[in-house]
Structures are given as C-alpha cells and as structure tokens.
Length: 87
Image 1: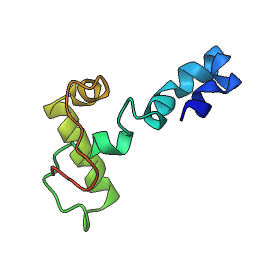
Image 2: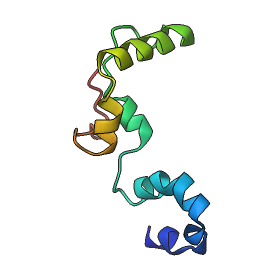
Image 3: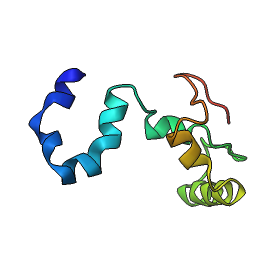
C-alpha cells in the first residue's frame, strides 16, 4: 500500500488528520474498527437481537470498560485474527 501513502492528498493537514487512521489500517499498522468491535464481549444473541438491543449492549460494555477502545487503538490489546470472535 505504499502507493496510497505516496499520494499528494496526505500533504493536506485536514485530510491527514481526518483519515490517518484509515491509512494506517490500509498499511496493516492498525486494526480495522470492525476488528476492535469484535473484541467487545456481548451477552446477547447477535443474530436475533434488535438494533436497539445492540446499542444498549454496547453502552453497557462502555460503562464496564470505558478505556477498551482506546487501549485497542493504541495496540495495547491484541485484536483477534480474522475468523475468531471472542464474544
């Protein structure tokens, strides 16, 4: 993905600030957000629960461990490899 990083758009500070996470994901330096989300334990059936129930479960998980997302973004926590779901 060196071609992506070499594009001139990254010289624009606003674009760099807004999209640097996505560049890091594209270059495999950071986990994709869906991989981070996969590390949040859920106590409900994801296949049958309503969207409202899923948001409520996420809010409960945030209250239980409010720094989980930040730690994972900093790579202090391992992110599961594709195909593994810790929930």
